[in-house]
Length: 100
Figure 1 (tube, rainbow, N blue to C red):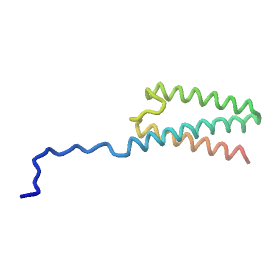
Figure 2 (tube, rainbow, N blue to C red; figure 1 turned 45 degrees about the horizontal axis):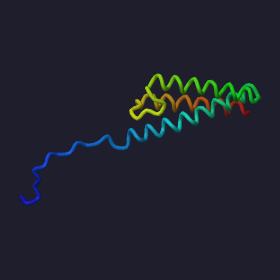
Figure 3 (cartoon, rainbow, N blue to C red; figure 1 turned 90 degrees about the horizontal axis):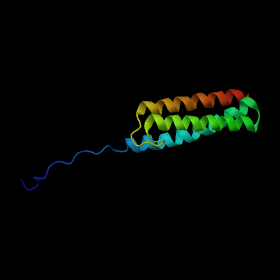
Figure 4 (tube, helix red, strand yellow; figure 1 turned 120 degrees about the horizontal axis):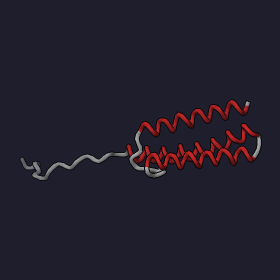
């Protein structure tokens, strides 16, 4: 019985999950904003289309901030990150189709 401790057990921390979701959110928001600019360029074939895409990206980031309280929130729901990933995939597919 020499190895028995009388100290209370420590609670487990949240782990790396919130950090991974925060990093994923930052990367996907950045990638999505760039994709919106490039899709705007592809649709209008001009710098004005790129500008409009970035304006739409700005409104999207503003909406995201109102929805989650911060642009890069630490406790963002997994569902929101997955939806953001799907939107980025759709934008990428649209850009690939515009390039052909």
